[in-house]
Image 1: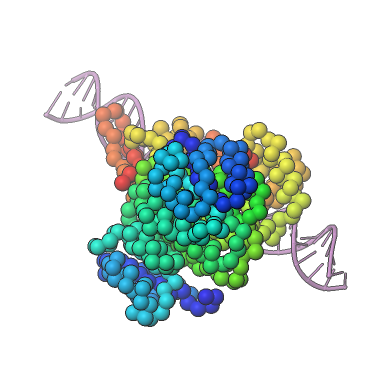
Image 2: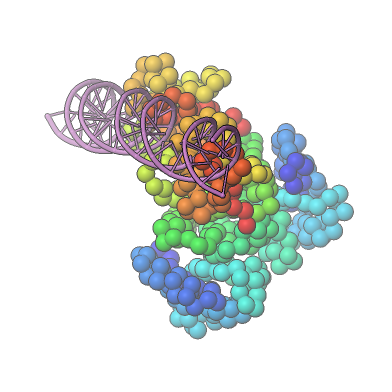
Length: 234
Length: 234
DNA sequence: ACTGTTGCGGTCATATTGGTCACGGCTGAA
DNA sequence: TTCAGCCGTGACCAATATGACCGCAACAGT
């Protein structure tokens, strides 16, 4: 458990995505792509008879939307069968009860599609640290040990942002936008957050460019049309 | 889910410990002791028929060593029955495979006996924050949201102090911050404590990273925004 | 209907200020 | 004495506000 590669089963019905995940795994040291399952039942079979995919599986990259079973169901059946294999959920579904269910099913990480290689790598590295911390000893000795192991799993990741944008301001803008029911202009963001119009616009444009925001011009008033922005909720 | 008290079922065979847990719960705002189960089967019964203990249970404080079933078995049977109720494990057992099994069973916190009220309160408060973050919206909108929610379960227990930080200075900074009613900038900490701005920042950043401090940029003046820090009171 | 005017927001360059980094010195312990 | 750890210094970097200028649409007057 200490030094051996972590054997990973990819559960994903779309071939392209499955290959992408496998390729990502190949770029990471310490991980071994042990196999791929295209639906829930074959995943369960593969896990039940380890020889089918070579060796015992340590980790499952589980897509939530599968042709036969929901990923959560697969996870629950694994638990019911006594399997304690760790699971990382990979999904485009953002519904709250899915997240809650995933936590209850004992998933260790939750990855939202689409994700970059950097995000993927970060999550898996965190899992590796978690595994090493728990694996370095036969018995945990203190509350602190457990806390540290959990902390390595649950450390928030800072996704890369272009130059000129600070984390604090970006967070403030996002927070503000989420609270708004109607689209807002850069001027409104300016006066509500107490920042300059130029700064507000830089962040709004960035969020719009990265797809988090919906942007449309607002006509009807004299002057150059003003862009209005709305948080894109799924 | 948002404002209602979190209803807690205590699963513990020793009467004294069960009463202690209930008493601890009473001291915490936002939590309601909904009932006590003395063994695994009665716990499962209580969860299956919510009226037995009054109302649907939100959280289970689960002792691992029970007379009839192991706490992990109870958790697994809950999952198998489709229950997504959150579980906090309370145990004196420190064996590694128990911890691993607990993670797989979807427990959200792991408390090692004996523990102080402070530790108990901290874990439950963290759980409450986690619940609020996921409950404040019907759908999570980004990877960051999930990360932050998970991070709430992370321990703000001080990780081993990074190099460059001394015990004495850290204590002084914390002392100073606790006295402040308004947020302070690193410059203010500098002149009040007589240390350099760089040093002040080192400590402030560390405290902010470990979650003890709230950090936000201060706008309105030209130049790069100045960060202001405030002690985060529980 | 066409055209000039007006008003407002987008855009850009620049000044300003605090954050960041690397290095060096000081202090205490082995 | 040496070494590690903590702190200060100064140069550089990054994020912001400001103000001048530009572009576009509405409006009014011809």
